[in-house]
Image (cartoon, one colour):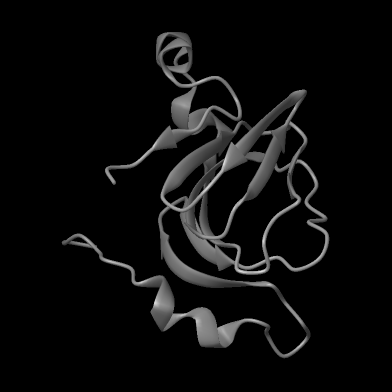
Length: 128
């Protein structure tokens, strides 16, 4: 890739659910970075990932559980779950949509950088 990318989630919502009922669809991939649009319904059945995961909430509200922490979220919030830590969305509205992006756990392996990042489940609102 020689230039940047702009993703409009609305361009991908029609792909969910997928043919086999999938609740996510790939929207961008570059090197080791994967970005999907995810729209869970009912119960979020995630299991811990082998890669760090960041989420940007597009629509909906609820509770993000990451390890032992519980944080409420709303549109435009940023959520982070480090590789291997159990996490899930609970009590979320039917309109929940978010963009999870996955990167290798080693992507931020520097101890100094890890200390500088928000603690798991910390929510940093984007510009409103």
